[in-house]
Image (cartoon, rainbow, N blue to C red; front, top):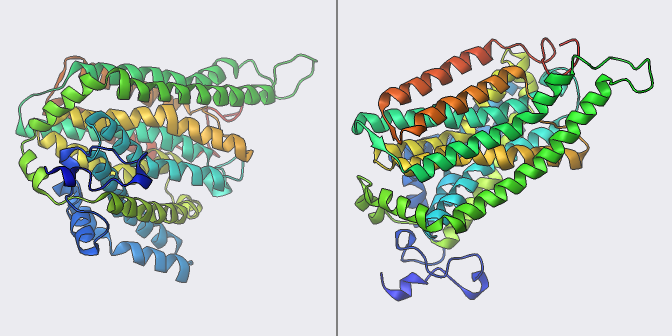
Length: 447
């Protein structure tokens, strides 16, 4: 690569946010913005599977028109906004991937994972902002159960559905795929710690709810109100500590273990069965990356608002809160990212695929979930980490199962199919789980 191209996308103004030496895999050989190039590069996306999600782009303007011109069709608007999220999230993820290509491997994949989680963060923050009631289901304005289900649903979708499909698809092309122990051990260990941190408030509540009384008859009696207050404070402190743990995790990946992970991912990339085709594809310039990121961020934020304001109508139509949060929301926000991971597994890049499945799960547990608790704290809304026992059991069992599958350092299509089947069972169970106004294990003594 000529030296003038190597720094063609860096300018003094952007000195601190653009890599000084763009990685050869991310060099576009161009500068500035070209509409025709932008369209061509955006269309081909990160993988052949993700490319076909671009066929859904015509639904995006239709969703906007219906929202503003025909607001009396809430279910139609929700359905179209739900589908429209897929190509927009794909563009955001792809723009992050293009920027990541310009960085060293480990730094790049951390940035890519962060961009992939932006949709989730936006959705969580809009949900907590729209939360208005402390009791009942989302029909009554209580969106906390939906947020809690979406937090754990995001982790379950990554660990069971995405990882399962990666193992299955990769196993169809290669009987066994071996992954590096430094990635699988670090990932499974962090998942256990993250899961433990998330579930402490639930364990505290479950242990003490039998001792709490509805109203105090004596001066020092432990009441339901005190219990709820303590759970909220524990959740808030835990959230801050988990976010600190996430910063340490990022530093560990980017600095302490940089050389190890770089070598693993570089080797994975060279083992890519279509690596030469990826290198030959046209790429975004830095300017085009920024345009794509801001365009997709604006669109995904508005579509998320369209979804959230119609959750009440969707629940009234018969979609349970748990299914909405645990299955539907995580599925659409992660669809494009999962297609990329599955494509990597098909191409023999199982270490990259693991990063794309386990990395977002860790980020959700250590950063995204704590962030929504802290945002709710500042907004004066009592968002806590007191999850339903049903969801606690699902998370713990999923982490244990995935940890066992990662322990031997290799995968096959049998393990993949089993993970997907477990996810389908979870989806069926969540469909039949009653809404919080009917049954709850964490909202009151009479639940």
